[in-house]
Length: 53
Image 1 (tube, rainbow, N blue to C red):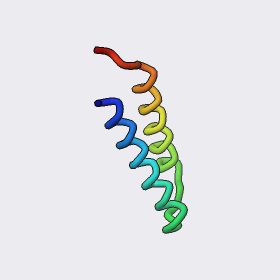
Image 2: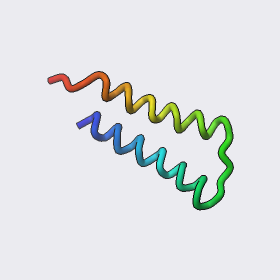
Image 3: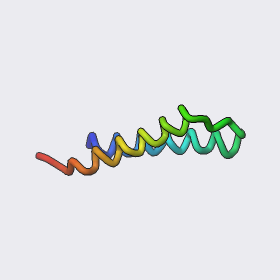
Image 4: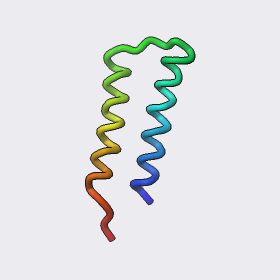
């Protein structure tokens, strides 16, 4: 459950940022780009851990 929540939270946050950049023409700078990349890396790391019971 925690991995699924992390994935949806990360994807939702990253997509919201990307939509803001594309639709509302918000400026993409180093910090915004780095934040989106770190979200994606965090979700990938959670998935690499796998499921443990």
